[in-house]
Image 1 (cartoon, one colour):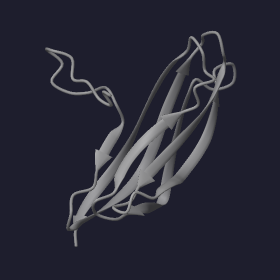
Image 2 (image 1 turned 60 degrees about the vertical axis):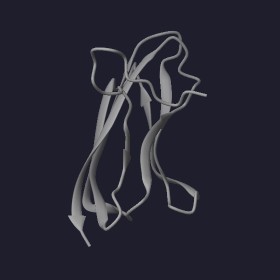
Image 3 (image 1 turned 90 degrees about the vertical axis):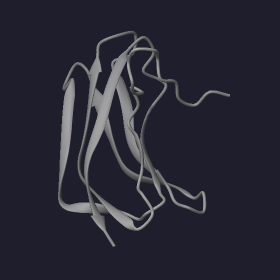
Amino acid sequence: TDIEKIITGNGQTLMAVYTIPNGYTGYVTSIYASLLKGGSNSSDICLCQVDENGVKRINTTFSLDSDAASFLELFFEVPKSISGKSDLYIEADPSAINSSISAGFDLVLIQD
C-alpha cells in the first residue's frame, strides 16, 4: 500500500508529514489550514504525532468552516514539544467531500 507518492518532476510530496530526527526535539510554533468550498463546507483538522513506540496522540485539533473562515493559523505562545523519533502529521476529517484542504505546520529543531 502506498502511503506517500512523489510525482515525477515535483521532487517532494504534498503532505504535511515530518519525522523528528533522533537526538533532537521539535518545537511546533504554529499550525495552519485552509478549506475551499466544495460539497461539504467544514472539516476538523488535527495535528497528530506517533511516538517511537507507535502510540498515536492528537496534539491539537480545530475546525474550519469555509462559510466563516477559509484560512486559520494557530500560533503557540509556548511551542509544543515533540520528542525525537516521533512522526508528526496533519489529518483532515474525510467528511469534507469535494473540498480542497491545505495544511501545514512550522517547527524548530533543537539538538538534545
